[in-house]
Image (cartoon, rainbow, N blue to C red; front, side, top):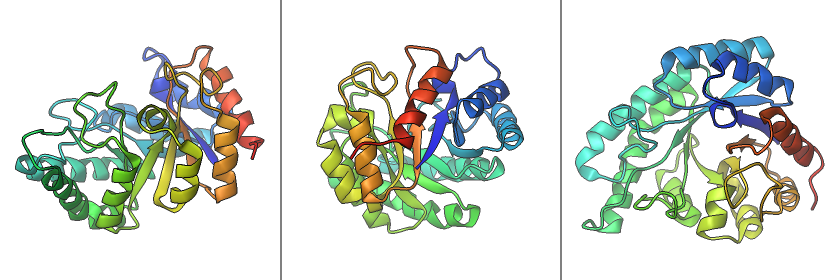
Length: 263
């Protein structure tokens, strides 16, 4: 497994992006991620700093530029054209900065709409851009989010996420399994990861409560990493948390857990 760091989650926003990347690399990161995708100048600096440090750009995130929100409006059939256009622009930006993955949060639920209609809207949008993602060699990583912190979010369950990914049926659309969100939403982490490892293309980590570094809360991360290793997961484990200590110490802590997981 490769360790990625979503640098502007761990580092203070006053730190220049290039410095964030260099510090993450020095602490043991194999790759870095960044948000949001529409901050092109910052992303160009991240791409160059990653090249200088010899690490990959694993991931960019961020939803609709129009609202500066975290989610693309994929679940709203009336905004389908807008959602597809935003995804296409985001794919092009990810391609420009050599990012391997684009994080996709599929928007907000509408209680007045049939859930099946909303799901079909999400599937339609992802299918519509799958070929563009393939051409750019960018993988769309669809992420469920917990509804405790994001009331009204459309995609909450990893199981619903697997169903969407399976329906799209593209090698360039996968599930981003955020251990933090799924501990809050559904638990059963290890059995879920083992059973669905082939549908998971990216993993995010943060502990519960508080979304701090692994080892500060209730999740047994050495066991989680051991289960991922035993299941054959060889993708990215992305640090997406607010550290209680300095960022480098937190990154090294996760690095040690990954290098010596417990089964």
